[in-house]
Length: 147
Ligand SMILES: [Zn+2]
Ligand SMILES: [Zn+2]
Image (cartoon, rainbow, N blue to C red; front, side, top):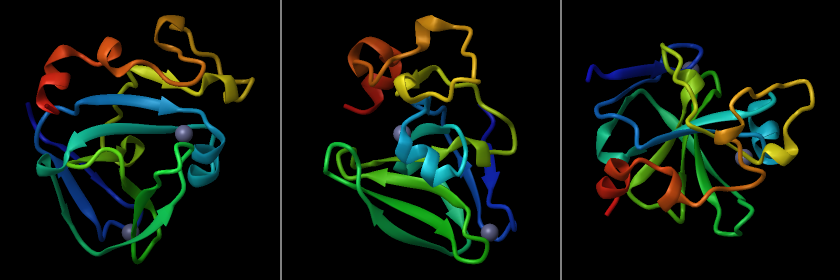
């Protein structure tokens, strides 16, 4: 595949995803609303080794529902939040897919129980009230790549 490329708003930080993302999901939880300032986030999970970034980022530790926490990374100039790393999923990063140059469609919607009421999701089969079972939802190929 051709690389997926993205950047922050000011363009000082650029990145490429060198292999197909493992999985892409939208999260409608309250934390994601806060951190995006919008109705949901779209995260593409990629292997850390496939994620190449240029430009300066800073990071901060934030809490997760599980209590394990995660590290969020921002452009030092414009402050755009580009990706994060969950402490429970070492070796992977969650890229904020809306910072890609081309849009990428979510394969699942999670925390739909907290979804804003004016957003309609036509494909109910990929909607999950809270979370899904990864073994049953991710493509087998992606499960094999994280082993
Ligand atoms: Zn920037
Ligand atoms: Zn969320």
